[in-house]
Amino acid sequence: MKLCILGLLMMILSNQVGAAKPLVIAHRGAPGYLPEHTLESVTLAYAQGADYIEQDLVATKDSKLIVLHDIHLETVTNVEQIFPSRKRKDGRYYALDFTLAELKTLKVHERQDAEGNQVFPLRYRGDGSFQIASFEDQIELIQQLNRQFDKTVGFYPEIKSPAWHLEQGIDISQLVMNVLRKHKLDDGSKNIYLQCFDFSETQRLRNELGAKVKLIQLIAENDWSESPSDYDVLKTPQGLADIAKVAQGIGPWIPQLVDLKTMQSTGYVAQAHSAGLKVHPYTFRKDALPDDVTKQQALQMLFKQLKVDGVFTDFTDTVVDFLGEK
Image (spheres, helix red, strand yellow):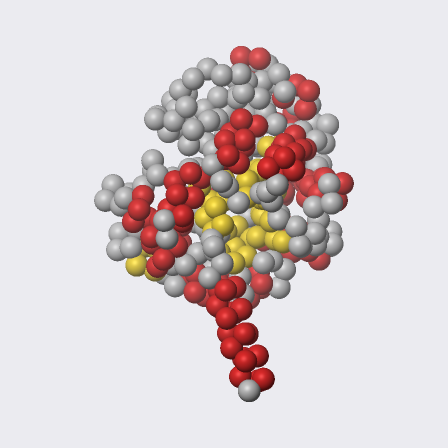
């Protein structure tokens, strides 16, 4: 009888773990409403109920870490107007060529394309005085909000272009680990995931830099030239098994999980789960869906059909509301 009761309890606990509520990961804060990665955008994502908030990390000239999606500045700031002579030979303005103090003088605006047009036309159209935030700015803000609201909203930093930074003489992964350890965040039990597109760097973080934090291997497509990693290999069962040796999960692109024409699963989520990996795909944007797919259909596909463990989104409130209705 005792064995039967014990077995029943284990089954109940197993079902509870398997039915854990998916994570809502605020992609660059709340860029569906305010300029990405700014403290204001982070605060809005927090208020909308995010479980985790993402920080893309880039190094500065004085080896500080700022929260910026690209190694370049001109797509989201007015750097051309403030420092017109500081571009490199390729015409681009690199965050690494500026000190943190200089970067703080820039004004952050809604993301623009090469022609200066707003990438998402219906998003923020104002002229507010938004600034670049440092990684430590965001750590302090989220920790203080957690303290005051008695919540545990987590961090989800990404190490951007580690191979490129190393070519420039900066070990950005070491800088990131230094900050995490300073704030006692290099801890697998804390609400933080550290992500990177470069698999060799993910391995280095765990095996050489001694990272204890939960790691996520991001999965791109080879033609994006995101890193030296071969993503076709990483998408195979053997690739997933190799990832599982050092990381707790993967962050794939949504079209890698489902055929957007037929809305049929590719089987990748199930393969990752079989390898013991969490799956946190990117990016749900309700203003960038296929023409014949509604936001409700897209979210049902992600959470009910594919059964992902979390999702990156520009619209935290939309995903939170959907999960609340389940």
